[in-house]
Length: 79
Image (tube, rainbow, N blue to C red; front, side, top):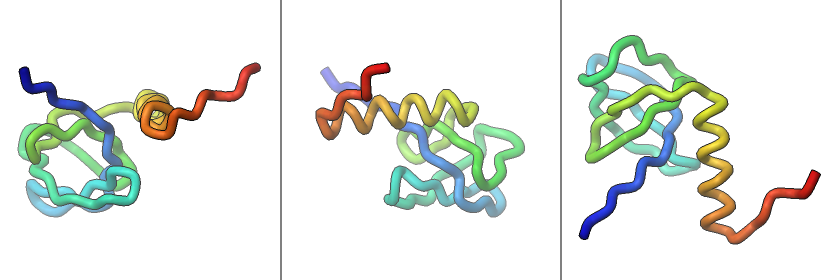
């Protein structure tokens, strides 16, 4: 069984049907042909080189924080 992970990326720049996106310091060029009206600062989900969905900032930041916890083993501070 193959599983794909969807990790948010922040759009750095847009030109024609391509965007440079930032996966927490790793930048990649992706196709944005499936989406409309992307601008630098937007967040997207990327799958196999295509931005497939736009995310709102809050949802993206929450998802990224969960990924940081998984990857580092850190637990959020108790409130």
